[in-house]
Length: 334
Ligand code: GZL
Image 1 (spheres, rainbow, N blue to C red):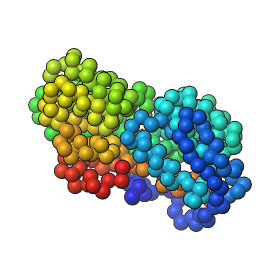
Image 2 (cartoon, rainbow, N blue to C red):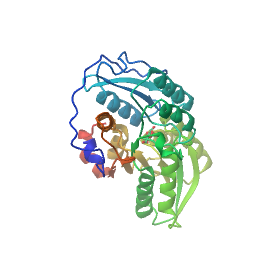
Image 3 (cartoon, protein in one colour):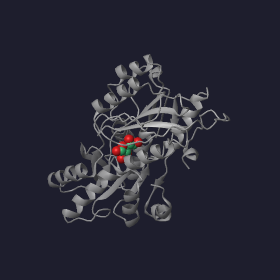
Image 4 (cartoon, protein in one colour):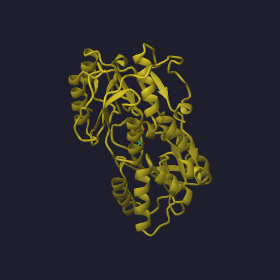
């Protein structure tokens, strides 16, 4: 399903990739980089070091599972996996440890956009190709990584803004925004896309915008503050389902009905979010597909076989209203 998600199938096709010799490997998700117990590639398995943002949301859990399920020993990989607990210094430390291990490939989802040039230069100097998954970096030097595979976050924010403008912005409305992790590509771009979409609609006022760091708990806390400060909130725009679900808890605790008294629009499309949408507590969700594992595996095998990949691979996202969620909920993979 994920491969059909790509608007531009830019991974070089038609390269026969022999199943590589297997090396026992495991992938944990400790705070420190783990050696997966494999070899350095001389046993045939492709050694890969992956630094994950953390475990902050349902989306992240699905993304981690997709990567670990795809880069298995049976598929010819020796995966070292680390969870950075949303701290850039942990990701930089993990990447340096992968360089020291001499892995053949490094992949990571950068928790924030900036501050990567130095460690990416070190990977480049070590001759280790780097693949960005899910989130981008703002490095000027695009030779520091082979490709960035992930959604178009500006487009996601625009789709939310267009829906709010068309469906709710026919009268004056007050919007509060729960931003993702400060400095992260999805937070920056989803805010930009939303602002661009609503710019021409004078009915829409964004009366407050704060980060909830992509977590349910922080989304709830920030929404509690908004509800105390602003008695006339009409819409909450949350940059991910988890913060939206936290906001719903706060809305209910304030004696209001989510999806009715205060409309809720979010991005991700994880199971809990789609369940709330089907029940009418969320009004609209733009999906952000986390199932990047199979395509990461394909990218690495293409490169390992001497093939090339495009520098930007965009995953295609769907959008759902309540009826749409009810129709697909039972079959959702995440
Ligand atoms: C988006 C991803 C974001 C999700 C959040 O690709 O980076 O991080 O929208 C997750 O749920 O925490």
